[in-house]
Image 1 (cartoon, helix red, strand yellow):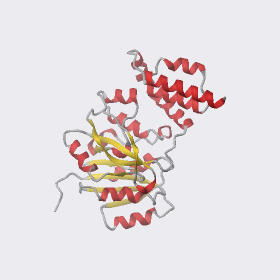
Image 2 (cartoon, helix red, strand yellow):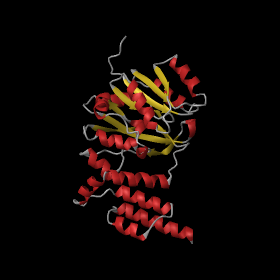
Image 3 (cartoon, helix red, strand yellow):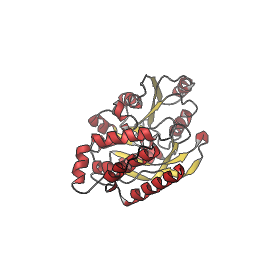
Image 4 (cartoon, one colour):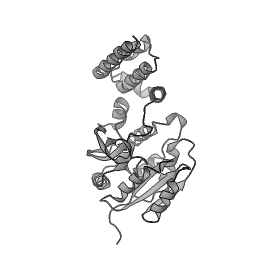
Length: 296
């Protein structure tokens, strides 16, 4: 019998994650919402990923493709977007997984007239799927959403998002620019927010974010990304400044990265200090004090 529920296309990019991707796929198979397709885009894995995918493809509605994304994961996601046949597109990283009710709750929220839905994820260590008592938190976004995202930072987690395909068709593909690597998701939410304000956050925690692998922050990389964001949206930040509105999260991130890489300068603190909120000022003072104690 043909399902009356709209089809959800789940896009999973992967590379040499054969030891974990099964958890992601099994979490989709175990959904209480049954009308889905899985599209896996593999970046020429050299482990047993392809053999695993072939086994799933023979049993469930899963298609897999192999490309060379040249280190740009957006190329894999975009290739997947081009293959979708569903009314909705969901993103899932190959080392993350969902709670059984994730798609049902997401589609119910979207059916209230929303265009993009997201939620918190549990942090988890290794493939044991045991949660740790901490969440990767999202936040409710205020309108205009574009302004909220720029002033307060990315409040959306990639592996939680389900979005209408019609929105993706209007806004285009995810950025594949080298300068956007590691923040291409944020750039995408910003672009989407220029054509719709219909974002909705589900209060429940409906998935797991694996922190057992390469999810370790690199302060030099963070510094480069934040400076690129600040440069990219400089005109908007200047306009915000005229209203005494500042992206404290960016200046806090830059100063933190400079402290961690020992690039901090007194003049940097002087320029950015007035643009930090009270909480970030306190954190910076603590970091400077802690760093001074380590040196001594």
